[in-house]
Every structure is written in structure tokens, then in C-alpha cells.
Length: 312
Length: 290
Image (cartoon, rainbow over all chains, first blue to last red; front, side):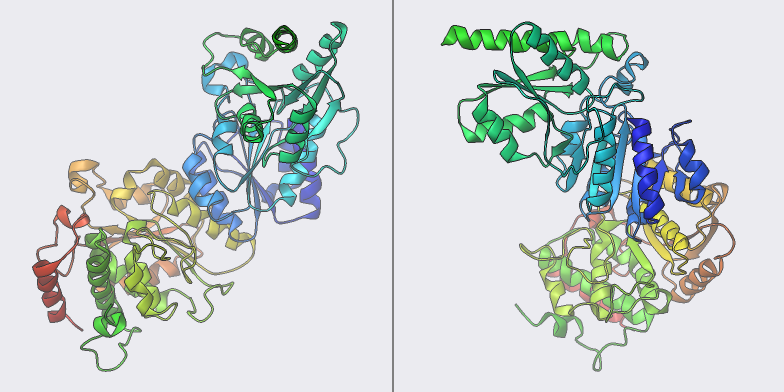
């Protein structure tokens, strides 16, 4: 997703000289094409995220569209108040980019696990939030962030993720979710890089005789209320999947919509259940430990369907 | 309510000459006293310490136009110590950005004039502040944007001394120097008092001028209540454009300046003058009318 982001951003920079990129001393190698092509439009702000985001707000006031790049929690939790007061409140054209949503930096430890960022950024009025699920979605959301006025949050995965979409995601307009696979018995709703596991879970369920729909939400704020309503009417169970704490994140956003509908649809949230990671491991290992790998997702969906049948 | 403008302009022969920094500074204090009385709002000590700094900026230093507050090539002023917002509100109103009468609504339900400075709905206010340590970074970004756009307006940021406890101030100090933002000028209202104790008893800033110089800034110290000295220092800071360094003016001030019982008294970071205290403060200000 990192490279897809850089590719899309460079396409935009080629046609829009208002776009500036700031980095908090990160992106070794990844941002090299931008240093090579646009040395006057990329700024290394140093390891000083509060200063970086404040400067981004000031730059935006002079007509720039400022992308702010860092990893993990560094571009969000560290300068949170600058995002709130200096960017979101005045509607500054600042796009906060996180590489490493979830457990991407697995073995580096909990400091590098972005597992509350979606909840925190979603709670800020005036911030449009994207969490692409694969490289094609990363490109589409990068273009969307440029087109969307005001402050945005772009939560990327890592590099070299497998593709979920065969081709590019063309003509996408936020906040529409993307149907990856159609099904009839249960819907798996996914936001962010965990999409690969969600899609794989549906394939596993198919082998077990269960038809699961997979829907990716590259935009988790605003939420597509109508799409969620429609899903809640078509399926008795929605399983939300996020590489993130379930408190306040994507699953919560779905629950907020469904609860107000009162139509009897059940929502179950797969994610970290109010925990920090406490074991060492790579991204896939941690997904397995915390129950959000494909098999755990499939097992959870199957168990929920079984409960439903037993209840009936 | 009484006619507010008539009240604060009482004793002037016609409309006060707000082009005179001494007059404007006096009016900032006069309005500050009245706004604090009406609203029962706090921070009058900070408003009094920053009065000359703001007055000098708005009398010939800042290139701004009250009739065209969004003029593209205007200088930008950020009051990073947002709690002294009524000083900027008063200066903007008295110099014609919005009606002086509006000032009586400070703190009022449904008003545009919040306790900490807000840009929403207030002509001439660039940035909303209140949480300390934000303004210098925003100013650095503005200065960088102006340079990228080939524009030669300046960015001014007024900081508090207590505010310089914030690490983000020093992030911005490093960044502004690194990026050679020589059209950025910071002014520190160095009144030596913060929220509980003196600066010296809280987090010592001295050697303060040397710190800024070590961070790569042009720095000088000045009497922050001497309008001529302030103007000269600001003009020197403006002359530093081309030096490749941002500039800071450390304006030595007295918290509560102008009212003897408020001076150097932490109480007046919070207290609002009512009754006899208001009358006594007003009497002292009247004696200083320029």
C-alpha cells in the first residue's frame, strides 16, 4: 500500500503543484521517488510530529494541500491536539498519512502497533477517514483524499500486500463500500489491511458450505449509512473485522448505525478486545493470537450462524 | 446595557487616535478592564502585560487593512498565548475590524468572542488558540507557505513565557531555524509569571536570549512596555529578512501592568475586578490616560 500511495500521490503532484509532502523523518526508500522528482515539495520536519502538524496547518492556510507522513501512532496520537485544534477545527487541507495500521510493525512491539487510531481519528469532527484494504484501494483513497477538502486521515497497511481487487478501483466515490464477494448467509464487513484475511475467511466458509458476502469499507468516516442499512436488512448477522481495538473503531461505527435502525440484525466485532498486545510476533502471528486471522474469522462466523440456527 | 463604546471612550476628545501606540495600549487596558468586569472572565493580568506589544504591532508594524481583513498579502498575527485574547479583540475593534460595541459580548452565551482567541466569525483573527504551544508551529508553516508562493508578507507570533514550557515551542524553534524562515518573528511576553508561580520557580527559562540564539534565531531583549523601544526592536526584526534566521523579541513586561495591585500578582491571572476593585483600577488607568 505504501508504494501504491506514493504512486498515486505522484500522479496528483504532477498535475497539482499545491500538493506538499511532509515526513516526520520516516519513509527511507519509500519516499525516494518524491525526493528525486519534487525535492522542493517534500519537507523532512524531523522527529517532531507536533511541530510538523502545526506547520502543515500553517502551510495549508497559504493554499497548500499538505500530506503528513509517518508510521504507526506517530502521525496521530503524538500530535493529536494539533490535528484537532489546528487542522480539523479550521478545516485545514491537511492529510494525515499513517503507514502501519494495526500490527504491521508486529515484532517491533506495542509502541508501534496502531490499534486505537481509527477510534481516535473518527471521534474528531471534520476529519474524513480512509482505511484502504489493498493496494488498489490505497490508490483510490489517496486520490480521494486530494479531492476531499479539509482534514483527512489515511490509514495504510505496509508494503507488498497481496491484491484483493484484480484491477484498479475506478470511479470510486467515498463513502461507498466495495463488495468483494457476494453471499447469502452472513456478511463480513472489513476496513483496512485486514481485508486479505476477511476475503480468505469467506473462501474458507465456502468450503464449509457457508455463503459469506465480503464488503470492504475503504472509508470509515463518514460511514455509508444506506449501505450498512441495506446489509443489515439482507443479513441476520454482520461480522465486522478490523485490525484495531473494537472500542470505538470500525465495528463500533457499524453498531452505531445498526443499533439506531432497531431491525434485529446482530453485529459481532472481530478485533482486539480492549487489549494492548503483550506477546512478540509478526503481523500474521499477532492476528492469529488475537483472533483476527482468516481461520478465526471463519470460525467466528460459523459459530454465530450455528447459534442463530439453535435459537430458531 | 450602557453604551459600551461611549463608556470606554469617555474622556477622549472625539474619536481616540488609535494610530498612536500609547493610545491603543491604553485602550487595550481600558477595554480589558471593562470586558473582564462585564464577563467576569479571567486573565486580565496577561492582557495588561501584552498591551504595548499588541498596540505597537497594530500601529504601523503589521501590514493589515481593517476594511479588507482577508487581503492576500496581509501580515499574519497569531496570538499563541490565546488567553490574552481580549487584548487582540480590543485592538481589532479599536482599529476598525469590527464594532467596539461588540466587545461587551465577550464570554457571553451565543457571542463570537470566546475567552481564548478564536478565528471563527472575527475579522482579522487568523488562528484559534488557547492550548499553549501551537502558534509558533502554525506560524512557521505560514512563513514557509509564503516563501513557497513567492510572497513577502510576514508572520508574527506572540508567545507567553510560561508557554515556552511546552516542548512543541522548541520543536518549532528548531524547525523555523532549519528552514531559514527569516520572515517569521516571534515576540515573547516575558512577564515572569505563569499559572501558579513565577517562571523562575516553575521551569527556569534563563539564559533565555542565549537559548534562542543557540537554536539559530536572531534574538534581542527589550522593555515590553516602552512603545518606542518595541517599535525599534520590531523594525530590526523585520530588517532580519534575508538573514536566513527567524527572529525573536523578548519583551520584558510586568504581569498586570498599569494597575498597582494587579502588578506581579498571580491572583490576577484569574480574578476579575468588581466593585471597589474595579473603581480603583479604573482610577489608576484614568491617571495614565495618554
